[in-house]
Length: 260
Image (cartoon, rainbow, N blue to C red; front, side, top):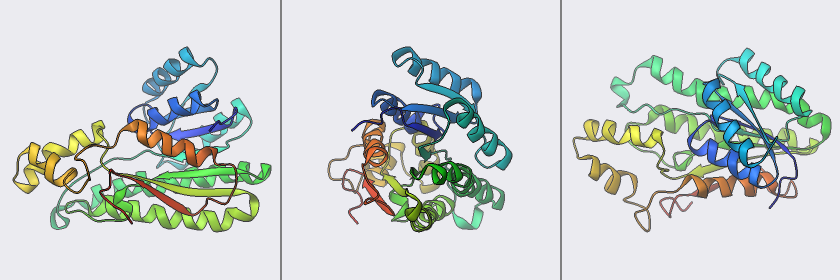
């Protein structure tokens, strides 16, 4: 599947899943705006992509929970390339704690990045998509959009919320040529997941190896992590799908952990 010079704005794209998706989109012929809280990291990622695919990447500084920064970042992309054809709201963090000791400030911070960020970036790109009569909005959900796990109240709430927001955008945007879908990975071995391993080991009173084998991968069919490349292929499938037949949906890639 090809993107044929379509313009994609990917948040949290300086590393991890977002960077893998940006690389895959550029390989498929798309242009990618690497949006990240850290402009230097975003620029380094864009430079690396441009080394292989000249002129296919730009860097954008963006705190997705800040409306002014989101609007300015989208305006920068539109000024450079004329529009935004694909938004992939990927920026996210993880904080683990039991509910009774989960700081309200941490709850608000996590929801602001995952949910406010998805809302603000969608709000900013939709007028451009409506004007051209086409567009794709993708949210990075999780198996936790479908399931719950201990210690992850804010994360599970945020990932469930993305399903609702995506479905509303699918309903509102459908008549105007815009579709919206949610990608739901299982555990992907990224710095975000690596950070969780010792945290969960401490909270649960088990070894780090037990966290990996039993908590994270215990319900998969093969005991393997999902890869960033796996998720990049799912993102390309959604982004390059040729019609609005596929909208308001979610797709799980989790090595069989979740089969709903």
